Length: 72
Image 1 (cartoon, rainbow, N blue to C red):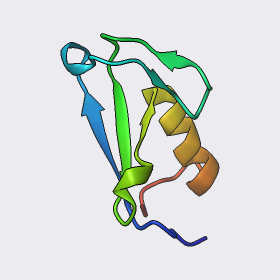
Image 2 (image 1 turned 180 degrees about the vertical axis):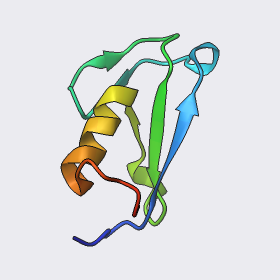
Image 3 (image 1 turned 60 degrees about the vertical axis):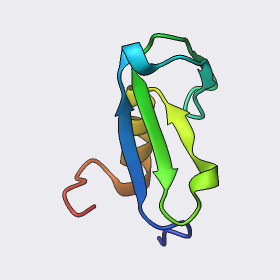
């Protein structure tokens, strides 16, 4: 499985810095203002950045790479 958009960089957004509402692509639910979450940015396509609930990003990584992610 290739990575067409390069490595994805996940950055934690602290609750005090979460000032807008975003839609999580993992659950199609809203991330409300004031809730900590992750911003995931593909290295080669930063315009495709997405805001994820942390649990759903972890689930996405397991779906893509399996439970053992030590090689990522």
